[in-house]
Image (tube, rainbow, N blue to C red):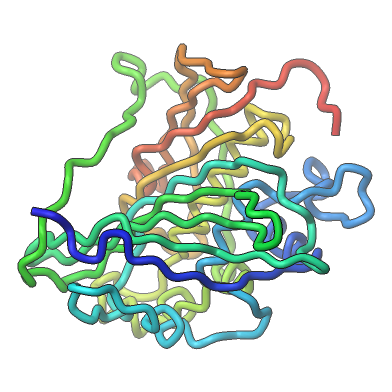
Amino acid sequence: MSSPGVGHEYSADVSWEKRDILLFAISIGCTSQDELHFLYENHPNFAAFPTFPIVFTYKGNTSEVTDFYEVQGSNSIPGVPKLDWTRMVDGQRMMQFLKPLPTTSVGRQFALRTKVIGAYDKGKPGTVIETEQSLVDKQTGEVYTRAIGSAFFMGQGGWGGPKGPSAINYPPPRGRENSPDEVSELQMTADSAHLYRLNGDYNPLHATPEPGKKMGFGGTIMHGLYSWNASAYLLLKTLGQSDPANMKEFQARFAAPVKPGSKLVVKMWKTGEVKDGFREIRFVTEVNNKVVLSNGRALIRMADGKSKL
């Protein structure tokens, strides 16, 4: 059964300034001790953290606070029932980094172009919407990042759509599950979500306890994309000397909610696969020994010796 809405496209203008680059970096854990090039606009190697474009799904073309439910619910998909964004959580995200991102869009025009890949009916658990998003320079047509993502709408299935294909899994290497090559940690504060939401993701689920209680989470939870971006930060710092050019691809599946103030523990495994100088890394992110990000995979150029940054 073919999926309804496949090929449906829409586009939104996006923009950013240097302050947005700085805010994103500090919100995901970058420090002046190790990553000043992400935090100081006059650093000779000032750069955007590679995963920064993930914010454009929510930030769009403004730095003002927006109504999350109104903005996200404005794009309907042909053949799919209207979905309730107050009961949505992230499913999985994968991003490919094709060109270094300018540290500001001032003087240029960019758009985030979205195409529906599939709309899948999972029955009683809910509905999955899968999309492909490309960050494009409108004047040159150049694509800077490409992302595949899925949103899970809880308890909103049973409308007769296809169940969808089986997902591809990237578990830790067999026999080495309990022996990661690297382990890195990041301690959140009780207010980490309030800082991260200033990047443009103003979902009330991450700011006040009422939505989380309604959804069965017991209260406020962290943005899934906070854990996703913070894990990318730890991988790049640990294996790629925090050089944005050393990350080519990054992905993970959201496996469990994370409470504010938790400690993220990222376990990393190097595999034998190397292509164009980038090595495949498998990873999981845990909180209190519970996996919160699974299916973790990144392509990282392993930096040897002293950082050039």
